[in-house]
Amino acid sequence: MRAHPAGPRHGEIPADRTSVVPADLNDLDPAVWPRGARRDHGVMTLAGNDVRDLAALYGTPLLAMDEQDFRSRCHDFADAFGSAADVHYAAKAFLSSHIVKWLTQEGLSLDVCSGGELRLALRAGFPPERIALHGSNKSQHELEMAVEAGIGAIVIDSFDEIGRLAGISERVNLEAGTVNGSTRRIPVMIRVTVGVEAHTHEFIATAHEDQKFGFSLAGGDAAEGVRRIVACHGLELIGLHSHIGSQIFDPSGFEVSAHRLVVLLKSVIADHPRLAASITTLDLGGGLGIAYTSADTPPPVDAMAKSLTEIVERECQVAGLAVPRIAVEPGRAIVGPGTVTVYEVGTIKDVNLDGGVVRRYVSVDGGMSDNIRTALYDADYTVVLASRSSTAPAARCRVVGKHCESGDIVVRDCYLPADLAVGDLIAVAATGAYCYAMASNYNRLPRPPLVAVADGTSRQLLRRETDDDLQLLETW
Ligand code: LLP
Image (cartoon, rainbow, N blue to C red; front, side):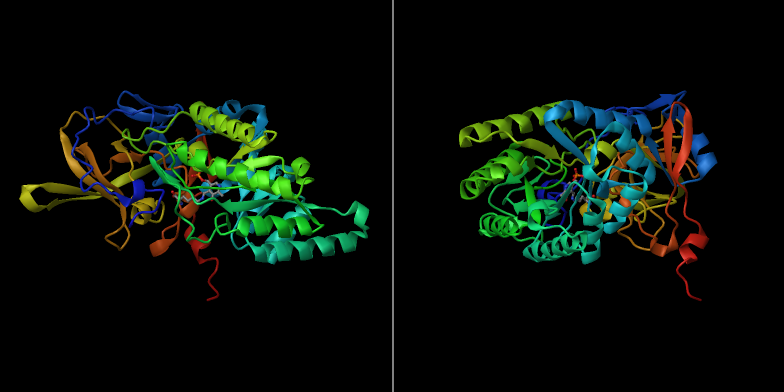
């Protein structure tokens, strides 16, 4: 398997994604583009902002995020899951101080998976009790920071971590001079490897033990982990957690995972009856998919929420357990669809392929430094000419970056109008998740600005990096 689970299903990369020529190259499929994306006299506008104005103001490449799109997807999740569930935004998809503020206002919870994400969230004023900390190798310092801040849960990932946390809890209680009766207990969940691998359209229910995350359910580690957590007076087990993959379209993987978590919950409560009151949450993780192209058909959030809620209720009923709170951790599904990357077209080069076919290489002023997903996962994207419309015929294209590497591909197979010219602006859809978050300075390119657009106005959430920024670490 060459591709990552977040890419095409199980690495089945279609040999040629360009077999179908789009009926209208100017079309903006609402399933793929931000909710505020339109064409006005042929020019793409984002929440009322002409992309040419954005490019003139901030330069290219730039990421434009439709603020209302982001906020409305937060509402969609909160409404769909209702008051019996907690929606944690997964910070790893993209985080900035403004995003933290929007999440605070929208009432969501937050997942972080490093000290850096946690520090930013705390500094931007996010309520610590609504934060959960993930990570397969949390440092002593990260754990201490989380405990000191009083975050809502630490999702324990290993036996080592139980030991580290037990030590921290002992120290904290010693310093606070608490006696046994009033021990401050650190709220924790346990990450269970449920043996389910799910992405896009498929899942495998007997696979995926061979990876670094969590405690294996099948191997008995999860039960042993619970036993050790329970034995530690300073830890309070408040939930069972699993995360089965990313870019998932089909709830059946969650069904198997929820079933296995509920079976575990039942046996844990049978062994430790007092946990019936303390384990309040069943966290099904993130992974809800989005449409990168019109061929992608993720289920609507309310349908997914209904399925997940029904699955957990049914499984608990069968097991004779009270239904716990459900938690979900969407990252991509909230931040992915509302952002587009705007590039300026530079070099255009036609390359002759076998059989007299021509592929037009369209070079842009960014590339794998602002979007590594195509190179890394063979991810597919939708791209259009944005600074004008065109009635020219379709040309078979590949959008490539400016990096010194032939794998520097932004959109592998696409059609763009044949009259595309140097200086045109093109826009790539659904780049809000895991693009800026995974950006690099490869070839010493500065990271692009991230601009929020709303109601005909724009403002930078993150400015473009400068050469001075890039040289900040030099000791000369
Ligand atoms: N919760 C946990 C424990 C996770 O590990 C992840 C993602 C999420 C939630 C959020 O998943 P989402 O809803 O965003 O799919 N870099 C890859 C994706 C890696 C996802 C890692 N974990 C990509 O670009 O597709």
